[in-house]
Length: 309
Image (cartoon, rainbow, N blue to C red; front, side, top):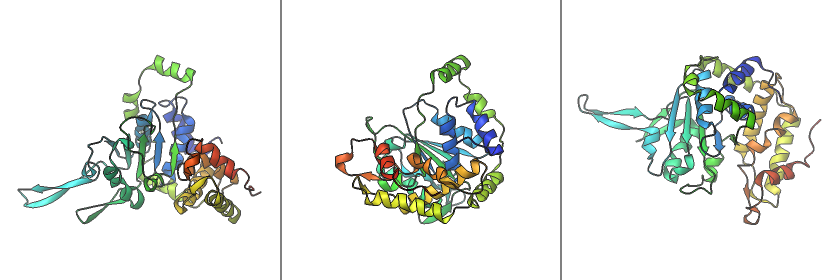
């Protein structure tokens, strides 16, 4: 669907100059951001994931933090830690990069499970607990994590509980030949990206998120989403179907999609168009089907569900 909301359209058009041919990935990222969710991007290195994260932070006037995941990354490298101040004769907390509005966790599946788990509370509760003290994270708070394909050497697959905390999972993919030609002719625009002027500020982002929450969802749409969840839970293909967090993600992203398209109510297409990005990574296939296309199976299971008129 084409974006009709003017302020969202300006954001997409501005960032598209730095992410040529990636308008769909950009739109999906912004849907996740304005739905107060978190985004997982599974792709090969060098396809614009960092540019995407920096661009969203800059265009919305928000702070940006980056965490490069490695096998020796510690939980305190993410959350921060208390350091003893000799002059004050007390411990002082030094916040880690997680205390930013937009946080890029690059190659998250290169970190050990213990370190990955440090993100669980932050993503789920919007807070971190360190040495018995709880610290609230800034609002808005948006994590973009990137993941290498699981077959690559030296990776730790994300556990199901962590996967479920990502509202969407997308892939950016290679640019088209024409888009790549323009990139090669124009060179890197990363320096220009850091200089772009914000189109929104923090308060406007929060206000837009509140407006999206007011988008109307009819009982028919809710029943449709429940039918989708029930179909995945009863299907012979899945050992675990869509969670409650998954159905909430469908509602929230559908509202944002409607808002982007200039409506204050959700239609079935808002839900249906986002299924590949909100559902596929949440359901677990039985081992016998592990080598089949997850997306195709999910779509085949839900395609026979009656769409409300």
